[in-house]
Length: 156
Image (cartoon, rainbow, N blue to C red):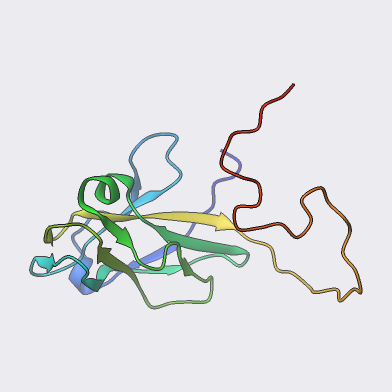
């Protein structure tokens, strides 16, 4: 595929034998990140922890990696990425960590090698600001925070 990009990855000692992040299906956007922990971590309801992945990346310029929750963990257990999406910049060379929080009703145990989050690598643009006196008009205007209502729009 012409959109493929190569990302250098370094396995850290505590994650050396774990598989590299992989796509679960052919059309998956996210690669699964694994917990590179020596002992299980028990997250009590409301508790948050930084979970190591044992990986450091060297993303190409113009790219970022986004750490996102896994939908099954969120739905079934209330476990999510607290700063979703977490952003890994192209110039960061430290370990990729996942800030997990348990919003569920029960404690959740994370074991070594379990899939804890997804990593989506994406291009990004850099902006240059242009200060102006007025912005162009749109139908929506300055309406926000629910201004378009809850009901689906019908038509055409």
